[in-house]
Structures are given as structure tokens and as C-alpha cells.
Amino acid sequence: MNFTNFGRYILLLKSVFRRPEKLKIYLKEIAKQMDYVGVGSLGLIAIISTFIGAVMTLQIAFQLVSDFIPKTIIGSVNRDSSILELSPTISAIVLAGKIGSAISSEIGSMRVTEQIDALEIMGINAPGYLILPKIISGITMVPMLVIISMFLSISGGYIGGSISGAVTPAEYIQGITTDFNPYTITVALVKAFVFGFIITSVPAYEGFYVRGGALEVSQASTRAVVISCISILACDYIVTQLLL
Amino acid sequence: MIEIKDIYKSFSGNDVLQGISGKFEEGVTNLIIGGSGSGKTTLLKCMVGLHQPDSGSVLYDGRDFTPMSYEQRIEVRKEIGMLFQGSALFDSMTVEENIMFPLNMFTDQTRKEKLERVDFCLERVNLAGKNKLFPAELSGGMKKRVGIARAISMNPKYLFCDEPNSGLDPKTSIVIDELIQEITEEYKTTTIVVTHDMNSVMGIGDYILFLHEGKKFWEGSNKEIAHTDIKELNDFVFASRFMKAAKDKF
Image 1 (cartoon, helix red, strand yellow):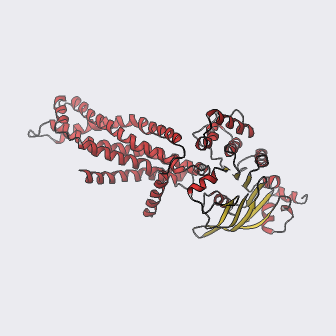
Image 2 (spheres, rainbow over the protein chains, first blue to last red):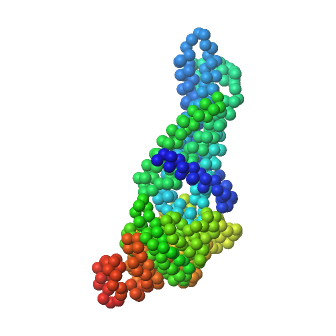
């Protein structure tokens, strides 16, 4: 059964990447989706990232109580954790909930109200028109959101550490600037790219093949979020294993 | 003209269509009728390519649609207009954008030309000036009329209507029926209407194909339908008290 779904998912992706009927209309749709995925999620990502960074600082400080460990380590652990894992993965899971459920519901509703059939009858490649702009917005905007998330998470750590007194601003700054390996950014962006693809394509698949009515649309939406989250975590492990 | 030859279709071992054949001429209103579950919507979907028949062929003016590649089908589909049971208007677009959508996708007309076409189509379905409304702001009858306007925006050669009267009051149903008939005669389209509305059958059924349990039971015109001795057809046509009472007058 799962192999059947995977096969259908691959076939759907094949249809998605067919040549667009009119590039201008697709570009307009891509811009709309980028606004929704990127700008529309900015506030949520900003709040989550800042608080996660602040909490991370406090927890690292709590766990590393030793005279042998310099406090600057709090900054470097926070930096690497934020860049490598927290910003890409937590952002992706939050976005899977926000964007994934919206994509699945939107496409699912269009399916049950015959709007997708209407597109196909007109001679329009429905998977391409509906899903391609969402995937492009996902693979471009999620990495951008992750970059912002990294910055805010590290900044949140600075704020949290300063307010609580767990680490001084000077120690924290020294920590985040010591032994920085830029390759971690590359790893994070590869993850963000993969997650952006999953967040948009999996819910689109779930919505596209909905049969029934409102109940089935909501079930597909839930399934889309669950499968997206599991896929994100599985791919997180695979990418980390391959790149580190 | 659209011709269907020996169409078979089954779902999970359930034979929905069993060797349906028929010819639908242009410029006349062709009806596919039958009870619920008789296979009429499945037949329509096989004809437009939303379902692939297990066997048989669908010929659009001699062009066999069933074995066509995706790209070849696109060319035929540009000549098809379809009105869906639930209208299938795009919720996020205004009436104007809905009608303009196929024009945007497949023509190189200027915005002015497209707007003129939208106004013409809306006027044709008696909805002039409703350009900026969203589907959620329209009544059921208005949605159907916008659906027709969208279907005719590309000057289709073939017009398909799936249960155009479902959910409409009798007066609005007649308006929709008359509109479909007028458009068919005016633009010489090959029009196929799937319905189980007996008012439509008696009102606009130039050619009627009756399906029962996935098989073709009868074909003819609305003038002939009252004078058949096929039990399944009579049971269907004269099921309502009104039709039973009216039968003697035919």
C-alpha cells in the first residue's frame, strides 16, 4: 500500500514538472505562494526561533556547571545547535503544520468541488498549475526562513543569557565567534531545501488524491502534516549522516 | 460530432459501463439520462478523458480521443467547454477572473480584448455587470450561469453539462435549459447534457440516450420517449406522479 502511494507520489511529481502552459501566469502564482509561505510565516518563525535560542542558552548553562568549562562554550553550543539542527528542523516542523495543512486543505477542497477536474478539462496541467508554484516557493522560501531563524535563535540566546545572567554578553559573543565552521551553514541550507520540498509536495499529494467530502479533506490534511513531520525527521537523519 | 463506440468501464470489478455506443450530432442538444448509479456521469467522464475507458473509443469529429497522448489531448480539450454539477468555479477568483482564466492560459489577447470577451459571455448568460463578485456571493443559478459563461469563453466546439439543473428551482432550471439550447443552436456546438431531470428531457432532448445499469437501453428524441414500451425507460420517465398524470396527454 505504501509503495503504491510512493509510486503515485513520484508520478504526480512527474506531472508537476511538465512544461508550463504560460510562464507568466505561473510566475504570478509563484510570487503569490512565496508571499504566503515566506512573508506569511515570518512572524511565527521569528517568535519560535527567538524563544528557542533563549531557552537553549539557559539549558546549556544549567547543564555545563563546571569550573573547568569556560562559559564561552554556551555561545558556541547554542550557535552550532541552532544552525545545524534547531533552526532547520524546528522551523520545518512548524511550517509543516502551518503551510502543509493549508496546502492539503486547499487542493483537497478543489478536488472535491471538481475545480481540479475543471482545470483538466480546460487543457491545463492541474498538478503543474497547482503544485509547482508551491514547491518552488517551498524550496526557496524555507531556506530563507531558516537563515532568519538561525540569526534570531542565536540573538535569542544572547538576550536570554544577558537577562538571566547565565552568561555575560562578552562571553556569549566570544563563544559564537570562536571556531566557527561555515560548512554548518551549507548543511543547514541543504536540510532546509529538502524540508521545503517535503513541506509542500507531500501535502499537495495528499490533497490532490482526496476522494469524498469535507471529512476526507480534513483527514488528508492531518495525514499530510503527520507524514511531512516523519519525512522531515527521517531526511534530517539522512542528510546529517551524508554531510557530516 | 462526437461518436462513442463500445465503451466499457469497470471499477474494482464492478462493471459500470457495458458497451455503450452512440452518436451526438452538432447543433442539437444531446441528453444522457438514467437513474442514479446508471453510469451516465462515468460515461461523461470517459468522454472528456477524466476516466480512461477499459475499452472502446471516443471520436471527436473522427479524432479518436482515447489513445491520444497528453499533448494531443490538450489540443482537443481546448475545444471543450464543460459545466459541472457544482459549477466548479474557482473560489479565490472573481467571476471575471474565472471566465478570463482559459483566455489567459491559451490566448495572446490583450487585456482589453479579454475583458470584452468576458463582458460578452456574461451578457450572454444574463449576468452583465457581475464581473467583480466572488462565487461565494452568487446564488446556485447564478453560479451555473457563470459556469456556462466560462465554458463558452473559448468558443468551444463541444459543450458538456453534468447535471446542470441539480439543486435549482424549476424556474431557474428552465432558464438554464433554455440557455444551453440557445447556445447549442447559436454556436452549433455538439452539446451533451447528463441529467435525470424530466423537465429537461421533455424540454430540450433532441437526442436522448437512456442508460440503465451500465447498458444502453434506448435512444431517440423527446417526442418518441413517451411512446415506448420499454419497461425500464417507462419506470424512469414516468416515476413521478406529475409525469404519470401527464403521460396520457402525450
